[in-house]
Image (cartoon, rainbow, N blue to C red; front, side):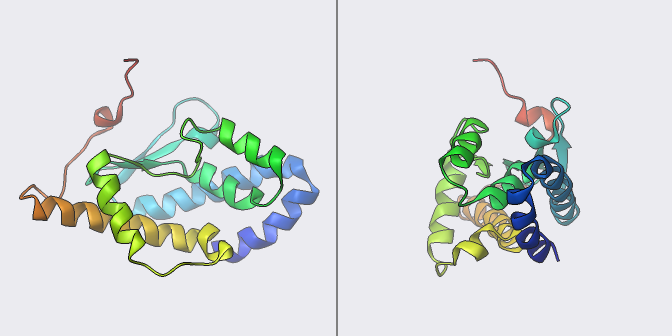
Length: 165
């Protein structure tokens, strides 16, 4: 189970910092593939560094970096230097954040607020992140249904293109 592997790898990567990118890349891509097989989505592989590759969903506007999430899970609690490195990895300051449309972000936040609190270990567990993604997709579809919109968007990679302005 990936949750258990990451908990073991946290200790190993804190002792051997040079192993962090290798473990984060391997586990992040694996985690991304698990999600890609569960939800119609594709990888956006801009650049050669898998750290910044994103999964982009077809049915709802949702994107995130599985490798950044795994890296954050591996480095949590390592002090200011790790936090600074992670913050530099993401414009939003949250490297594992889900990229959503604003109205969807509100619907997802409301739905997640209804759930019980989780421990720090549970928060960083890939199984929990997978549940959050499932809940996000359902919340977006529910919001669309209530608004009289199509529940699935049939997005394509071009819908996620980031313009310069």
